[in-house]
Image 1 (spheres, rainbow, N blue to C red):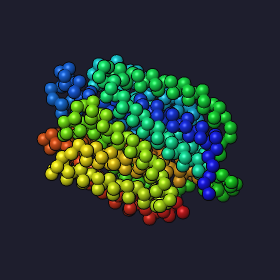
Image 2 (cartoon, rainbow, N blue to C red):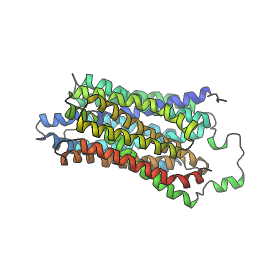
Image 3 (tube, helix red, strand yellow):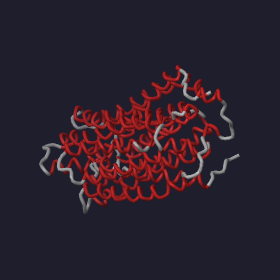
Image 4 (cartoon, rainbow, N blue to C red):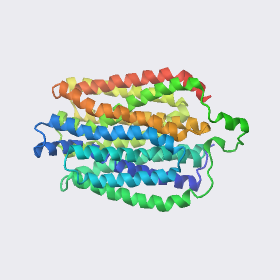
Length: 423
């Protein structure tokens, strides 16, 4: 029988969704406009070629992912010791400030410094979000909230993809980032007002609903079985591969559509709204597949990786024999949606397994960090692959398929010991 979600559970879910929406609004805006930013640097004379501008601007995106990933580990550990509401307020405030500062940055070195701080600011958000969900929501509400919070990232991305092409017609990319900071500040004020009331009552730990914790249980909470660290290491590797595909493909999709298929830059950015829409749908679909079909987040992730590999190879072959922008948009959209599905399995579902050890924030931050290790490698890495291939993106597309196969293999290797841990 389907469990009823309480009004308080829904309020928590949608408030945290709004917070995560603000995070993506103030974090993905730069990456979404990469194509325009690189051409602006060339037209201003800062760089002589588009490839040189791409490599330089990619460093800004890379430093954000590095500081975000490193910050996830630090803030994850702190998040199990500090009030999560306080961390969220500090993170949103710092992120809004960095977006304002970006408007005034005169050159790439200044942008690297500001966007690096912005990455750390956003790393203060995900671990406390997971901790709040696991602390205040029961099992059914946790699943409900996880899907909605993931929607927050997709809605923000869709909004940016839809509005940026229009806004770039009459304002600079710097002004758009400034507008994002204004939106983030409004959400920060709303969060500060609402969180005191919503989180005022006692929490309901997911792991202890309807149960009484014994002295023996309390003693066991602090101990993790030694064998779990091997599947955890494999899961981290698969998360790294997922991050390389998710952010690497997403960040360069406008450039691929523009340079390979001749779409205007604004139209190329607009077409990339399709992956965001599919990603939003995928959270709901993959959640059903996980709960109703596979019943294992690791098995589900491996199947998703395999489907991503198929899509990558279809696009690679298509580009060789009959290049088609329609096939490209569909294939890229499915690959990105698949990586969001893997992200949901390994970064939203897996940390919940550690609630009985009191380490939800620690492992949510640690696992999420590996997404951005992969992203920090992939964003400049795919640009270098293109440069080495004399301006062709096809070698990078082939790499997507290989990375997907590796991701599936790593998940399969982790499954036996992870199943033992879950039992």
